[in-house]
Image (cartoon, rainbow, N blue to C red; front, top):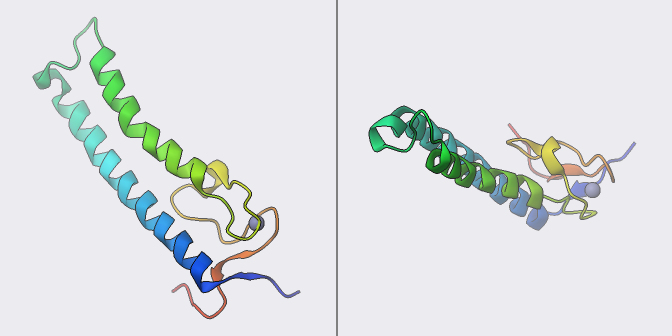
Length: 107
Ligand SMILES: [Zn+2]
């Protein structure tokens, strides 16, 4: 069965998203770790108040959710949602398009 592939432009857009998604995820991971490690020194958390720390964690995590939610299939435009994780899926589950352009090898 012949599968559909993305055009080079669509593929480029997808790679662009992946780069942003991955870079931000790494940034957020280290930022969260740093915040958690230094939270007591910075006075962000105490036994009775997790407010400021919770806000910072939410602010770091929100863009991850946003990046995940904006990824849509370049071919049919349907949202990939959380299935995407760090990388775009190999194939769209709705229209079956292969998530790369035909002439490019993902090695
Ligand atoms: Zn699709």
